[in-house]
Length: 613
Image (cartoon, rainbow, N blue to C red):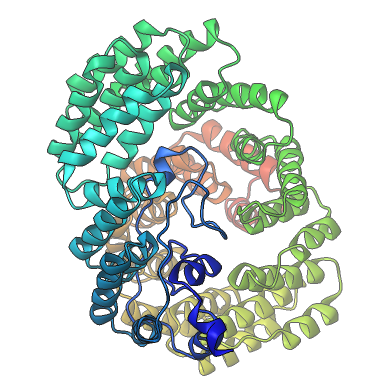
């Protein structure tokens, strides 16, 4: 047994447990492996060195093979007891959180044995400790010991770029471009550019890139890379010139036209550029997708939907396209189409379980769409698909499901469902109270809803959302003292809550009391949220109560232009009625009745004015 141990070589040991390019220690044979198994992980951790292979070899990552490459020339070194002890000690110390001693040990052993894997391991230790210069020194030794190793060369390039040591890296880049097959040279240019983006000295990296690509300047790819580099440095005119030349050289290049679109800046011109390219190259999918996104930003939703439909025709199960069409259809007030596309999005994700998109948001939208068309069962079914692992979305879905249960007539079931819902955080407990009250309100049980809110307000007296909702419910029941008290508590706790100022001011104006105070409250709310149509409506209404009909009309017309709301229409109609514009007032009220024939504000206004439409 003793003799068997003596003839073990260093090469054999490392070959059995080849060093992988990660910050973790390699496994050691026999007792060494057992010793390492119980050792703690190193305290110093960091992201691995960005391997040049990641950008220099498309789709491949550098990694140590299970067995040494046949092309890798390794020394045959006998593993002495002293050497084994040093290796074990270095690994255990590194796992204990020390890097410098183990690093020096591995570097010394690498120089002594001329085994490149030890230098690679030293580089990993230095990088895990975020010691860039030491990592570069180890990688340089690794490359010296394994000059035939592409992996060592790639890591050396990456480390040199990150250390802004671009001299030798530039020589290696130039050799790569020179040796690349013509068909692969363009991809090599893109990969070199991506690696150079890691350099801290952007100007030096840009200058190096220009020198590297100068011999290939007649290639469209070279111009594209130079355009992207110039654009990243803020040299927009230079970027534009390179991009235009890239497209001139290769008029059917998608990457060239997309780069030109990126550096051009003007959205309108970009849209025309991409549309013209698509007319000549209708199969350019990436360009069509870019044009569709530009049209969305320009709020040209129907043309954007047309482009996404063309994309969907080519790839019917593309989740991104289905999602975009669903959102656009909602924007275009086409709920049936929106539901179809969003349901297709969920189906596409089900077919691709590895897709990282979160379906929760779409499931909630599908539930809302189903509810709007009156299918409460389907609305609940969509919510049930939300996974408990997505805790916030799942909890919201449970609350919404209880509301739908109540709307289906199962009030007892909804209340029991909410009682059984585990709400551990105070914020979640407040949400449960609000939904319990809403379920009762939807069922017409206003007094019971009030009792729930009253208990909730006593339990959570510092929650502005709960106090605000309690105040509005109290007003609905005519308990204006409770309403005013709670709104003032909200204002004290959340002085930037413009809704509370507006609600209190509007209540005073509606009751035609303390109008000066009402005006001050609403004015403060309007200064906080000058584009809110409902606060504009309140301002119009208090001006009406004060007898300022022209100011009232101006505010109400602005509000109605922003939000075609029934109550705003009713208020504007009353102002116009008292200004003598009775036909205009009646027209507004007819439109309001068509939208919401049961609206209480409309009914009370017509009754007060003793009118029938």
